[in-house]
Length: 203
Length: 319
Image (cartoon, rainbow over all chains, first blue to last red; front, side, top):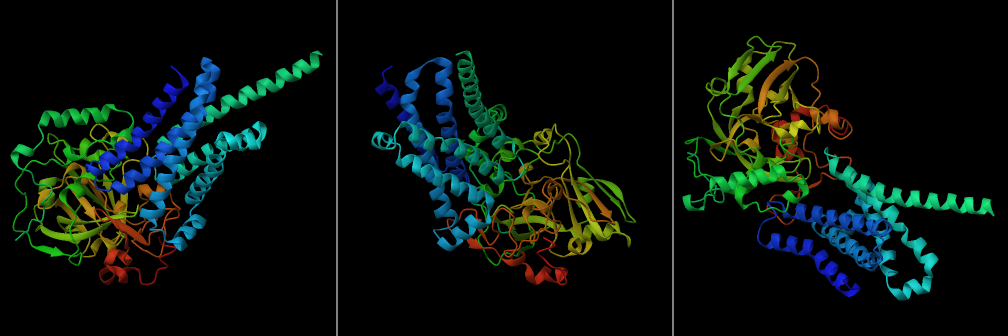
């Protein structure tokens, strides 16, 4: 598979959840409270794409399939795509764009505060996602900025965990997967540190 | 005379889903471990209803919802918080089709601080009472609401027959515990069995209803068959479903939700737009089927009938 074919496939596949939701909405298949389902599902899909984005690097280490890196940016942008719809649904159908109410909500409700922070943190990442910005920032700085993804991932899970009424199973599953994906990175980092130290000691 | 407003729930014979299809669907739902996908499944089937004759006819009907449009049969029977089956709101309608098991007669125990305790078969329990239809607003703590035409009788009538003594300060209600019938109880999402309670004066209030039906038909499993409580000025979770025990007690009963989140769910849980849930505002609600939200009413619009019960109480502290 060429890079181009892979990219087109992933691009189309990533749109399927959105298409299914729109189709279900217009064929009355979202039940009697479609707004609740749309808000929840778009939030969940943002989280799922976040997991996929974070899985790319470990998968590459595991499989050696370096082509994977070429779809990471697109997956990251889909996180933003679903999170944006999620956010707009909240601003529109929950708050009806009442700025006063929204600000009050963000200050008063920790899970909204975290959700808002998480969404805002995605913006600089989206803005610096093109090649030109990457070059302008320089690889090292760009990489450090985009490590914000780790914080976003943890915050998303906290947001999810806090809004659930009693059944915490689903947010805990997402949380564990994300912690595992971050744990692999930490392990690799520490291993690299110690082997570098060993190398220094040997010389 | 009961005027049936049910338009959406009724289907002609040809439209009723083939039973096998229906069963397969349920199986699919049970086996698919991902609850999340359930929300994307078509719900049309769950709404399919046999064209059963109404079980209760010629009821006196009283509208306690100021003429507000009643929710449809489909809305009331496909969107249910019934954690004994699942924490997914669309799942109970699919999972409770055979609930309660008709081969085991439903029994209700009335005991505690009263002179006439006893174990009753469901039929014997309800026989003495005159059924009526009452249209009540129903406000969920999550911020959505419906208008439901219940069939039932005043809890006060039942209490009078049980003759509570002077130590009976509260009434405690318990839901059936039977994980075979209610698979959601296999997971300890709440401390089963579900327990709720009312102060005796709340329980005696004429608005407090023991419900056995909706839209003139017997309650469906997902709505808390065969008998449930309805306290229209309190958040929906107070209206405990599928009751097997009613006990008169001297000290305040600790409800399942109080145990689960004492900071978030109080004993009274009166609908109050001024007192927010710690995690979300209670000032507005979305009536199921509406696009815009509406303002939540004090005591869910039943201030006139119940405000006197709380006249000397700080409702912020006694949430």
